[in-house]
Length: 103
Image 1 (spheres, helix red, strand yellow):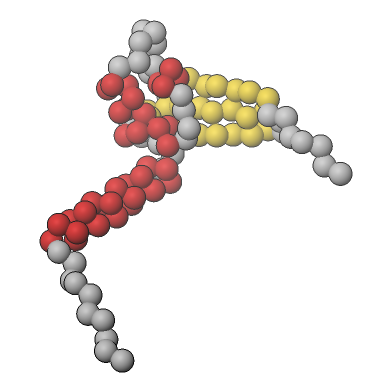
Image 2 (image 1 turned 60 degrees about the vertical axis):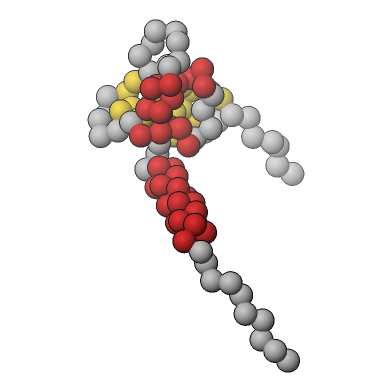
């Protein structure tokens, strides 16, 4: 039985693979460090300066400059948003999460 020889990775395929692997690592690191943009936020919630309009800069800031810390106390879940490297809170959103009844 003859061995099937596969074509080697071309430079274009290697570059594409490298790009997507790098992108996956960056997104994983952002999620691990608590970036607000990787936590399922709506676009309307990214108004960091409070002017009522969400700009492209504010959306990008949610990935690299704003972090979120989630705390849970019973059924209450709070998300505290702050600038990366600062303990000053930009905004805090709290809600009550209802858990399904256990049998």
